[in-house]
Structure formats: C-alpha cells, structure tokens
Length: 190
Image 1 (tube, helix red, strand yellow):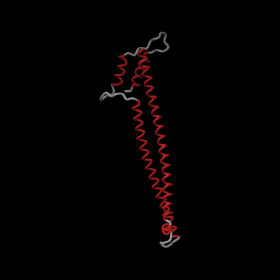
Image 2 (cartoon, helix red, strand yellow):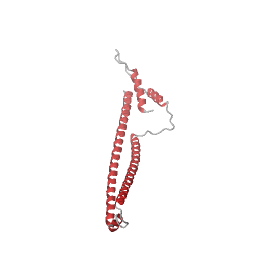
Image 3 (cartoon, helix red, strand yellow):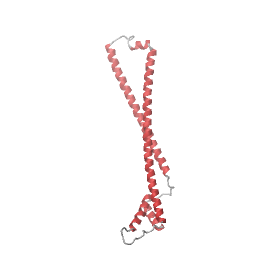
Image 4 (cartoon, helix red, strand yellow):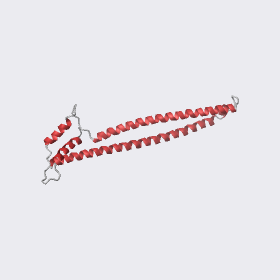
C-alpha cells in the first residue's frame, strides 16, 4: 500500500468528524497513535510481504528509469542502424542493376571487340579507374557518417527529453507525498 493512500485514509477520517456551518464549533478529532496504527493496518491488510525491504530513494528510481531508457535507446539505435544498412544495401543493389542494364544497352548499341570499350579504357587508364572508385567511396562514407551523426544526436536529444520528463513527474509525486506526510505530522502535533 502506498503512503499517499494511507494519508488519504487519515484525512478522510479527519474530514468526516468536522462540521461546517454549525452554531457551535467542534474541534476535529486529533489523530492519535491508535488511529494511525489502524490506518496502517487497514492499508497493509491486503498485502503480503515476503520480507522487510529498505525503502528505495527517488534517486534509485530515477537511475533505474534512466538505465531502462538508455537500454531502450541503444536498442533503437541498433535497429535504426540495421534499417539504414539494409536501405543502403538495397539502394546499391538497385543502382548496380540500373547500371548493368544501361551497360547492356550501351554494349548492344556499340558492339565492339573485346579489346575495345570499357576493358580497353580501364587497361589504358588504371589510375583514373582507381581514383574514381576512391572518390565514390569517400563521398558515400562521408554521407553515411553525416547520417549516423544526425541520428545519434536526434536519439540522444529524444532520450534526454524523456529522462527529464520522467524525472520531473517523479519529483512532483515525491513532493506531493512529502507534503501529505508533513500535513499529517502537523495535524498530529496540532
């Protein structure tokens, strides 16, 4: 049973004993140790506790949430990288297929001997072929690095936004519970 439920039971017991707009004022019944014990026993009656556990601090909860978010973000980054890899491979295969079909058409239009054409050009200009391949590789690698950096930044920003939102929500919950506890203590002493 949660502490806020226990305090709510205590407050409802107090509000039930107060009268509004009467000729004589009736002081609310003070919350005694017996009333608090009865509320705690009523709240805990439905639960079975295997062993006494130390209460967890909100920081522990936040750290757990943060680690779960980080693990989820890591899984999402891996899946996104896999999808980008598949898309890149599909694009390369598609482009190679286009080039193959275009090369077949060009070869059919310009039927030349085995020594002529691309083989002849490649054998005469091996440095030019190597330079073109290196340039294509460099451009593709730079584009992939840019996409990877943007994806990482976006994922990190999304993760931090979610962590901040969850941390703020947990802080507000803890503040409300602390306020209820302080009100119950003040009511007990007052």
